[in-house]
Figure 1 (cartoon, rainbow, N blue to C red):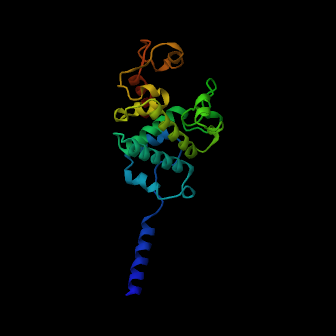
Figure 2: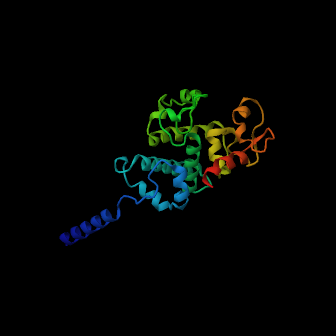
Figure 3: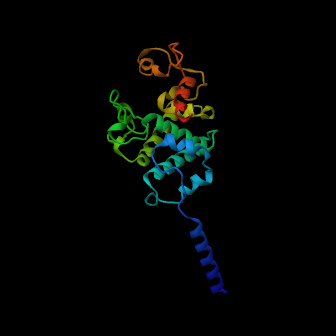
Length: 225
């Protein structure tokens, strides 16, 4: 009887090992604009969950980054009861990261004017406040996600955001770009005067000297049309 049970257990283990193969992923490069047009919108939650089965040594740098971003999405949704699905939140985070740094590492991930650096363009002031390494822009993208998660949580707390109203790509992007406006309506005016407007006037598509969340969203999503 014991031998029979051991045999059945061995068969079960072998079957599980056979099924637990590395995910056959379409997206394996850092060219996210190209990738998202091909497959990111078609990702199923089970495919992303498949990444969670493997440690970082079994995955490429790119898939480790995707895994960490998906984990960030899952944890944010669970911890704050965000209304969007894990996959939608993952997609919004990836668009935000791309809009900020184009997934570049090194000197290409530094804004030469403001000295903002890395995945979400941490400013000098934010780096100091949140203990973000000065060389954050040189770290692997997967490692930077940990600091991005810390930043999101801090901003949600600091601005007392109504997370029930954060349900779109632009809402997620604004947590980085203009956190005080993240939970505001789509036509809310983000900037209308001063240095902030001057630095971002490229978003003012209708040239009315006002930048709305809708205008910013249209500019960001233009990459994926």
